[in-house]
Amino acid sequence: MNDQKREQLSALVDDELTHESSPVIDSLLQDNEAKQTWTRYHLIGDSLRGHLPGHIADISNNVSQAIASEPTVLAPGKKKSTDYMKPVMGFAIAASVAAVAIFNVQQANQISETGQTVIAQSSIATSQPSLATSPQLVTQQKGQAQVYQVRNVDPRLNRYLVNHNEYRANTGVSGMPPHVRMVANEADSNQ
Amino acid sequence: MSQRFLFLLLTLISASSFAVDQTTPAQKLISQMSEANHNLNYEGVFIYRRQGQMDTMRIIHRVDENGIQERIVSLTGFAREVIRDKNSVTCILPDDESVMVEKSAPGQFKISQLPEQINKVSEYYTFSIAGQDRVANRPAWVVDILPRDNYRYGYQLWIDLESKLLLKSELKNKEGVALEQFFFAKLQILEEIPDEWLKSEISGVGYTWHDNSSEDFPIHKGDVSWKATWMPDGFVMSDQEKQNVDESQMPVEHLMYSDGLAMVSVFVEKLDKPANVVTGPSSRGGINTFSTMTDSYLITAIGEVPQDTVKLFAKSVVSNK
Image (tube, rainbow over all chains, first blue to last red; front, top):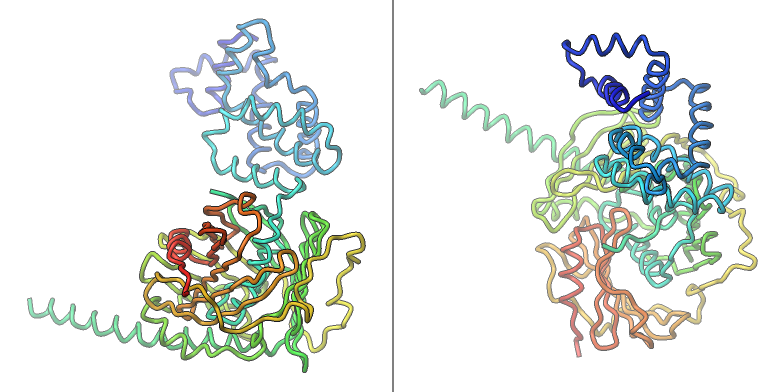
């Protein structure tokens, strides 16, 4: 499949093709490879939005893991051919989808085996620019990544917090049971 | 013209009487909520959410002749937990392999004087009932508490119609954006709670213990030598204490300031190695902190108030002597 076709497909998935482009759609529909790619793009989109039924979500998880084990997909700099980079850059959706998939896998990796985490993280570094347009996702994943990392606990601040919460429990209106923030799995964020 | 004036007048009258009618039940509900927490046994699972992060926790809350005993355990990530009774607060931190024991705050087991406090705080916050909602399969009143200036945060509270327990809450900034959220997914009010539910499953063997709850570290009321010289209108010093702590043996002063609703703590501690300390702002959920060094003293302000407020508090602290 050539670059032009990939770009047309991407536009189709993004709803960017107008009525005038219907011949393009027709030609894409006649191309089996294009049809398969189109299906994959939609599957990726649905998986991202959480619209997949359980059994398909499992398959897409396997796919994500397969992608994760091949980090070079997201490291176009390592490819000799510059032609290869073009479609990669052109498909911001696809790139961000893969990055998100790897973020999810990364979380799983951190729980199971730490060895793979390094690979996953290096992929994140190369794909982060395409995620920049989606700040909500970025913060979410940042949060997930913090879980199970070695915490940088400041015992003094913890002591202050406990003592503050103790008195807080008896002062004014407390919006929560005291000490919830101590139980929360969270490092302090220095601004 | 006169008709229009009459309409305006009527609107104003109805709006003001509406506001009066609404404020009183809101205050009454908050007071009942505080009482319910001092009278009921309950067990439940709640979700705590902030800055894109979420944790699920289990809470066990028992009230008997020994006062309130409470255990909160994280069901996600590390199984951190906090157990408190009338004597001490124990924090078990498996991620840090440490256990921290602090003294309970005295007086926390009597019902706080909320109605009077609320009358005073209505100068700094507005109270209203926003409507009804449903949380953890229970119908709830929704109470709005909005700050009148930028030095405080607002609250939205969901209070159980039947038991008056707090079912959900949101801490909000001046723009109404929720900074953290707490809500029950499941809650049961129980006649009795077995002792085992209040015990940790983690033995703590091999963990590092920081115990400041023993008789070796008594708390002295008063006799503090530091004070904040700036605070937002309505804040007063509500309590003060001094305690030598385990790790440094140096006295730590704890000054407490409250406007009747929010609370800011100021800690002053002399440090042996001031170079190892991180100063400046930090936050944890809806809590903001600001630390600054004066000579070899570390001054830290902590509270569920905006970053500017803790910063101004901390920077205004001076020695009395």
